[in-house]
Amino acid sequence: MRDLARMTRAELAEFIRDGGGADYAELMREADRLRHLSYDNEVYTRGLIEFTNFCKNDCLYCGIRRSNPYAERYRLTQRQILECCSLGWELGYRTFVLQGGEDPYFTDERIERIVYSIRSTHPDCAVTLSIGERSRESYQRFYNAGAQRYLLRHETANDEHYHKLHPAAMSPENRKRCLWDLRDIGYQVGAGFMVGSPFQTPEYLADDLLFLQELQPHMVGIGPFIPQKDTPFGTFPSGTVEQTLLLLAMLRMLLPTALLPATTAVGTLDPLGREKALKAGANVVMPNLSPTDVRKKYLLYDNKICTGDEAAECRFCIQGRVERAGFRLTVSRGDHKEWRMQHDAIGS
Ligand code: 5AD
Ligand code: FES
Image 1 (cartoon, rainbow, N blue to C red):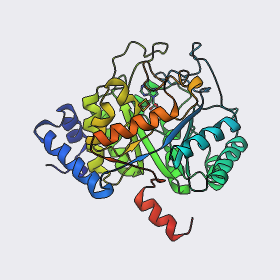
Image 2: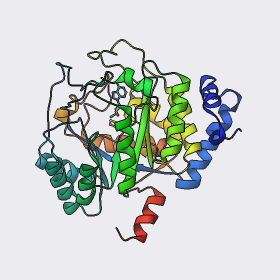
Image 3: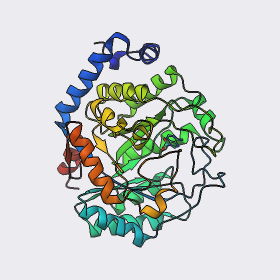
């Protein structure tokens, strides 16, 4: 099997265009072998709390974009967020992911207070933030308050493509600046992109892989693009599960110790999508922990799964899925191994 890490942009693009070609079966075996080498058959789990769907941005693909008048907006209070965490703790979660739109109501002070209160109530848990682009100073404040992980998908590493997916007010330079700042501060950083987003080409996907090799993030979230009917991309076709699996396996080869989630989007396109993603090299699942009454409102794309289920249902549903796919659901903070070693050394 050819060494993906040595491939040029053109070679990676050709490999992707070919769907892995003659190397496909070996790629999948290698991805599986490498994931086992780093993580045995453990799958980490995180409780996802979607705490606001207000967003000042207008990304063309996203159902909670500012100019979608049909999105029913909501925000959880600090108290509701803490209640989700307590329920999550009972269900065995030791990592909480706070995800939201870019909502100016959640000032640095409010985020700091929320992070701090979760860390004080549940000192054995990790807090991951996923709240978009902010200044380096803000990221530093959240880190000081106790957030140790940050998810910010780069969406596409190709500048031309970036401008086709986002309004002029957003720039690929700032997106990448955020990711480098987060890394520099000491976060475990997650980047990522959609597979099959409008105008994407195999060359652009090659750019994503090259960028990720440079950034060396601890986590990479990828999932198929799925249209949301009230967005400008509402009539574009979805990405495919097949291409998502190919890219997951390629990512496992390029970043052998990375945390790679089997995303909700891949489970939305195929009822067994998440199981397939685990077999292709993913090792994280992020069941929904948001209160049931707001779930249907966090609609980034159409037909999203798990919007009618209680937190406990998702927790046990996912455990069954992980086990039936031949893995073991691990209840621990699930830190990236190298990050943990560095931080144990400095006592944080
Ligand atoms: N289809 C699939 N994924 C989407 N996201 C946003 N909109 C869509 C969509 N229509 C992804 C983006 C974002 C993450 C939270 O969800 O990559 O970073
Ligand atoms: Fe939510 Fe299956 S993970 S119902």
